[in-house]
Each structure stands twice: as C-alpha cells, then as structure tokens.
Length: 374
Image (tube, rainbow, N blue to C red; front, side, top):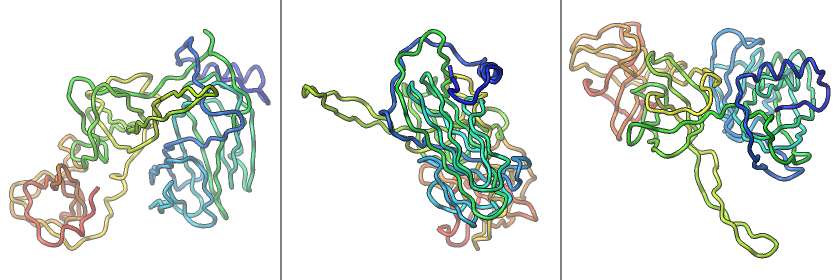
C-alpha cells in the first residue's frame, strides 16, 4: 500500500485507496532496488506535449526521456531525452504530461520535484506534490513509504513564460522488509507473444510502419503506452530490455551471478498476439510521429502509380481511405517506411491531399536517399 508519511490526512489516504481499488493484493517479498542514500530518476519516461497551459487540446508532440526527467530548457523550446528539439512545441505557454512505469523496492523515499513554472507528481493516481499553479521556480519534497512493486509515476508540467525547468528524483531513506498480505502492488504492464513464432516491432502503430525488430515468445516485454488509431487491434508501445549478466562477490568471497535488465529499444506492436499481465487500460493513450509529419517538406522525389492506388490516412490498409489515385498519375514522395531493406509504403502529396500508398506499385524518379524513413 502506498502510504504518505507527511502532510496526508486520513481522508486523503482513503481517497488514495479508492483510486487504487483496481490493484491486485499480493503477499510476496519485495526485491530491494538500490541502497540507502541512492538517488533515482526513473527510466523510459514518455511525454505528451500540448501548446496550452492546462493539458487541454490536441497532443502536438510525443517525446521519450530514457534517463529520467532532468531538464533545464532555459528560455528556448523544449528538447527530448537526447537533447533533440521537440518539433511543434512552443518555447512558452505549453504543458506536458510524463508517465513511466517504475519498479521500486520497499522502503521510504524522499521525492524531490523542481519546476519552473509549475508541476505535480502523482503515484498510482495519488497526488504527492502539487505546485502546478506556480509561476516561478519551486522545489518541493515529500516523504513516501512504498511497499515495493511496479508503480505508475505521472508528472504534469506547465511552462508559461521565461525559463523552463523540470527535475524529478527520489532517494531511498530506509529499506522496508517484506510485503505483507495487505500490501498493494499495482498492475504490471507487461506482455508475452503467443500463437506466433515472432511478432513485428514497428516504428508506429500500423501494419505498414517500418520494421525495427522482432519480439520472441517466452519473453516478458514492458508496455509503456497504447494507441487505437489503426482501428481494429490496440497497439502497444513496447520496451525491449537488454539482458546482461553481472557477478558480485560477498564478504566470504563467494561469487553470485545475476541477470541485469537495462532499458533498450522501444517500438510498437499489435495486441493481436499478446497475452498481457495487468490492466492495459491503465496505460496512457498517446499519439505518434505519424500524427506530426503530414506537413513534411517536399524532397524533389516523385512517383508514378502502376495501378489504381488507394490513398490511406496512415500506412495500413486498415486505416481510412482518403481517395484513389488513377493508374499513371504522379505523386510527390515526402516519406517512406521500410521492411526487410525494401521500401514498404510511401508518404505522398497528391492533388492537395497527403496520405500513404503501397510502394510496390509505384515507380520512382529522383534520389530516394533524400526521402526520410519513418
């Protein structure tokens, strides 16, 4: 059970328990993550950005922050976890919602949230720190006792004007023992591939998005978010962890070898052949790169259709059809997806419309190296 040590009234604790009503009760020994005094920032945060100051309106950009939320953007527009500019987000008057599923060992933690202008921290839906209304630099801390497990951390942030700063960390103050029968562990967002030998991991939630990896059976994959824009099956943003072995030696010189998981590649996979552990409806619904590139610049590369072509809103025959392109007409190619080293779908302009067509039935003219792979 998540228990707030300071500044919580009994009524607010009951409200927090109500929010966590769908969580599973477990009786298990929690694996302690880290040592007393160690500070954490989280891994693989997913952020959704809005060009409003109240998290309203359309999502204008999605960005990942693989090593935590520790950003001082100054007076410039925000950058992602790799310090790359986040296209479409203003330098001022924007807001963002960041989410991460974090495995945290049992113990008492000091959470620290620094923001300019405002921010709030929620753990499994329970507000822990809230300075969202602030218009200046603030740093707030809260002591929280966790029973151990996988928690959903959400940070909501607003930048109104001037400098933009967002930093979150938590420090282990004391280690707890075991999780008793009354301990609450939130749903674990993970999945296994079933019914097929392997499942495609793609750059977006579409059958025609670029193939970036293959998911295998008998492995657990962390789910970060979901998307339903293809219309039939829910797609999930997957974290592919990298397994390495580490050997430690105790005071008696006895070596112990353990498997260490570190966050690796992310991508999208269909839920059709997944067995999911936990409640997938708790995952955030996010948009993707494909929702942001319909105004891409011309590349100078054109294509001639070799069949009557369906122009789709996204690279999948399961998405809405915008119209048809007659045999032999010319399109401007502004993007592409690839699979097995070959062009798969083309992103095109045609008679004032922008959409996607299958690459197999298009002859091209121009330097394809100028056409970005999506």
